Image 1 (tube, protein in one colour):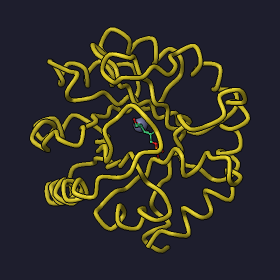
Image 2 (cartoon, rainbow, N blue to C red):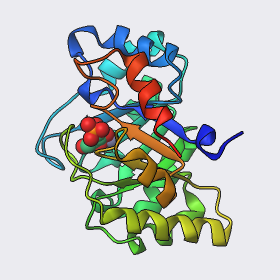
Image 3 (cartoon, rainbow, N blue to C red):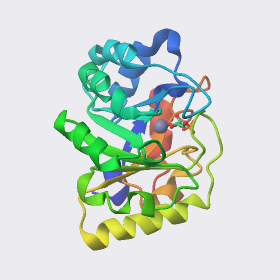
Image 4 (cartoon, rainbow, N blue to C red):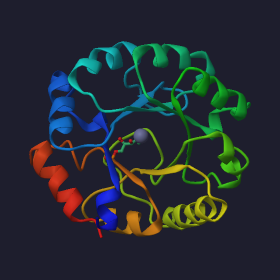
Length: 223
Ligand code: DX5
Ligand code: ZN
């Protein structure tokens, strides 16, 4: 097995055709995606609104892949039960949105889901470091969250490398996801920096190619 074959790819439906969202999720599933990434935005934590638990529940029948929910919302603890009931498998909250981060992680795990913490580009590793023993996923944003199709901020890859070194040195069972501007041009650098999992929206769902072709292109760009 080559190193790149272990890297997971999680297509974000943010850039999918929302008029045929179920089919798009099915296409990504058939094309060999590892997770379906769900960008939940509330118009407060980020300047955009997307979808919530009702839509997610409706997508369940189109895939058997783990549903990777990225909650870009304030006070996530108020809504986590709704997302768990909708059937998500991973719940990732933003460190910047949680006053009581440890309590929120316990809440997610008590609901039977894997627990994740996301960091905005300017948020330091120290915001999550003490929580590493209590979580399953760290998601590093390589763009400012809120919109698909932005350009990866290359300086953030240094943070990815430093966090991956901490995870490996201390032996934590933590999956490192990188989200934002990941495409066939940038993915190799993201993997070389230490990502276990690539989240990609516009590189997978775009009008220029099929989901299957896009995923093949992305995977073949990996080191
Ligand atoms: C950014 C979201 C990302 C986004 C990535 O707010 O968290 O998941 O969909 O989109 P691309 O891959 O187009 O940068
Ligand atoms: Zn995301």
